[in-house]
Length: 89
Image (cartoon, rainbow, N blue to C red; front, top):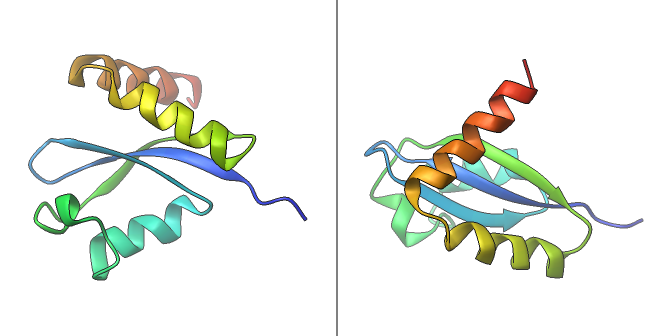
């Protein structure tokens, strides 16, 4: 069975954004919010909410897309989040 990978963006309590990759966005959100397995950056900015997730074909594709998203400005990331929210309505 092939594992699905996702790129995700979390919104932190201070309004900043954190981007990462995972096979399970909900589990990873829980780890960021409630365990020491969360990234050092997010541990100081709890609570966090899942603002965006995008499926990827493989871990390599997810990591490449994560890098692309991290190169975007905060405004461009927020537009990406907004566009996904508009599609899901």
